[in-house]
Structures are given as structure tokens and as C-alpha cells.
Figure 1: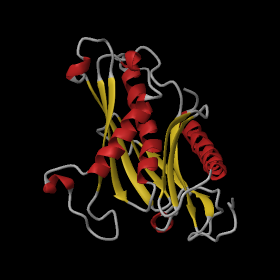
Figure 2 (figure 1 turned 30 degrees about the vertical axis):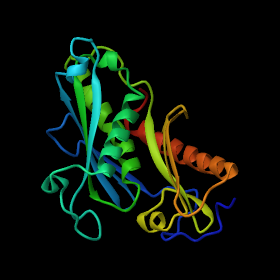
Figure 3 (figure 1 turned 90 degrees about the horizontal axis):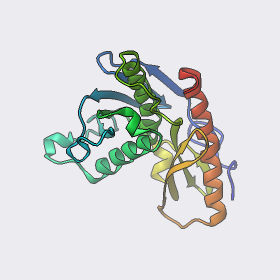
Length: 245
């Protein structure tokens, strides 16, 4: 198992994530919003609060958090048509927005949210790998700001968020384990994995795929160690922005 013998496209160490910049209140009308930049990947995450819940939760005294995800047509090297113009949402989009929604619900007390829905919208304006993981890390902060705003208005009385939440990609490229793959690395990865974890270091989701070769249990442990380190650093950035929950 190797984690340091390959020179990466941007010169990073194999256990290093890309530089992170987070701009809060990026979209003024939204209850919560951030622009998260991880290297050349840039995602706008907004949180919108609605005073109603889906029909299956009506009159049950609990709330809901759900997500939508999209990529702008020129967020990638070649233009892709908008899914709305094609008349249907693709399977990849469905998968990612469900991942974002259930990840955020994992660290939220939905009863404390009350009978309201928080809509998370993640719009990728520039894609260079890791868009789903950046979306989760940024959405947590947008959700936090939306909830804090509702508390100030007296709409929410209790603590909704139970822990921090962040995500990162890890993978194996050229027989080397590495963190936070950019597009060029991801496109030739032998193994691709996405990890979602809480601030306490508990796993929310592990998505791992052998793209061109299988991987061993030792390599799996290596992936998890790399992800744990990077997510810990991302959570530290979140704490620096919002403090203690």
C-alpha cells in the first residue's frame, strides 16, 4: 500500500486535500447559502426553509431535509445540456441528491426542526472532481445558517444539528492511494471512493467502487484513514467559521 510515491497533477501530497475557500451568505435571498471552492471545483449551496412538510409527514410533528443537485451546462470542459431541457433527471443526479439529503438528515434532529422542510440546492458552477463531496461539506454550513436564522425569528426553539458533517473523495491512481481526486486523477482512478463522516468521526456513508482493479482490506483501511484525516481538517474549517454547535 503506497500513499506518497506519485507526483500529483497539482503537486499536492497524496494525503492532502485541495485548498478550500468558503464564502457564506453568497446568495442574499436564501436563508442559508455558501460558495464552496475546493481547488477548481466550485459549488453554490443554498438552504431554503418552507413551512410545510411532504404529505407522508403531515401532522406527525417532525420536519424534513431534502436536496436537489445540478451542474451548469459549462461547468465542465464540454457543454452538457440542462436536464430540464431533456425532460428528465438523470440517474447520477438522482443518486447524488439523495446522498446529500440523507447525509444531512443523519446529523439532524428532525423533531426539533418542527413541521417544516429545508430544501438544499447544490449547483455546480465549475467541476473538477469531487462535486458531490464538496456539496455535502458546503450544504452543512448553508443548513446551519438557515436554522440559526429561524432560531433568531423564534421559529425553532431546540437544537437541530447534532454534529458537524463533511465529505471527501479518496482513490487509487497509479497504484497510489490519495485524497480528494481532481477530475484528471478521477478519470484514471483504479479505485474511487466517497466518504461522508461526522465531526465525531462516525461514518454516514461509504461509496467505494473498483473501477479498473479490485482492492484489498488493507487498502480499504488506507482509504478510510486518508478520508478520516481530510474530513477532520474540513470539520476544523467548519468550526472556525461557525464555532461550537
